[in-house]
Image 1 (cartoon, helix red, strand yellow):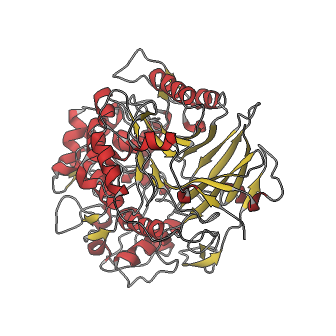
Image 2: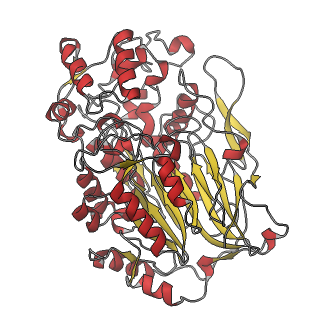
Image 3: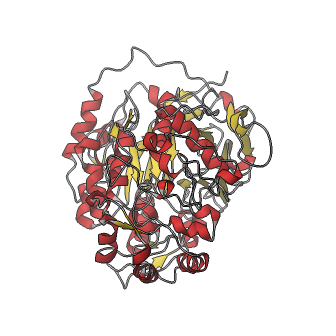
Length: 594
């Protein structure tokens, strides 16, 4: 069995750890807290903001009695995609049922460094964490949703969208059940969610997300508290009508009739909340209405969001025109969307108004994370701090382990469009952070990938500030030998990209699939020192805790989570390449570092 020396079992603190635990170490900006259960806290303070509340919370965790002794460290596969993956049981067309399939093997990636023999017997675990991304918790009855684009593109609306909360809770259950990190067995330190936590920048969705993560009772319903009022009860053949006998477009493809589905979908459920500390990164769907419109303060869209009218049908030609304007970013502030809604006001259906559907501002997003009601296992703010509120920013750093820091970026563009970029101020902050922490390894987190940071619409709050794309961020990260990985999402696809640079300055970019589209995955990432001049990053994909097989009569919380996965697999027009290749899934990524 490989011998793993874990940071979680270190017998004592050195000076840097002690200073960090007492809040005396500054890590550029932002607040980081205790990252591993029953282990000393590592707090990093923003120079311009007090951290007393955060440090007190971390110290409170230290006082909690831990287990009598550390569990034996050992690799394992159970509960991960190394063991089993949801797979269609039979057939190749029509609605296909899922069941247990063969797991995905681990692949060694050696593009950036050669693996050396015997490393498994001498490696030391430095850090281990879970990445969740693109949860897309959806208020499926929200008046601003664009379901009607399905008239020109089948994939523009997905039949599983009413079950996102049940699916996310099941994912939390899976994370809580993990027996440490799969490759090394070392304790998991924290969870990071890399954006698109919500789907439509709606306060209903933000509340659901925070309760899913921190624990609590959630009623995934808005508008009428007694009934579902969205497109799946509209009687329109465009959408799957699960409770009705109507032979809609999806039933013609084999989708079942599931009586009681909508009542179950909006029923209260409970999230246990994560048992691990968790951090949050912002995505374009968290920052912008519909994930694409830079319409902050737009009174028309705000009133429409909370109002009592909803458009459910649109001709394919008009739908194609709107979809094209969104894709091209030709109407980043939503003028074309305004015009379309006004033109079809008489065709809208009445729904129950709901003030909770209002869009939230960046400041409200940060304040909600700082709300004590959502602290759970911490840290307070989940990475965000009073410094972010004062500066109007959504990026920060935190200490992952004694020699590792995390950097969370804000790659959303307030000017509009779903692709990303960062402003000059954030780029310079990132450069300073990497420079000032040259003695620590760095893992960077963001929502957008390097390939999807091509949007340079000016920020309305800083119109003269230049925006910078993914190529510039890659070039900056490759200047520093302490950069190990850039972890992100957005594309809903597993993809791992090597970024080669001379002088031990190479790093890996790790993009993980979403939890709204099949195969609905999250990823465990482990960092180890191989004690031979190389490091390894192990990546292991996980599914939710819901069983692979479904039962249409099981409308319990668990049954709905299983159905959520199966519906996503069968969604008309869904992409079939989102799991990536074997080299993008369960891997060992080798790096040479000085």
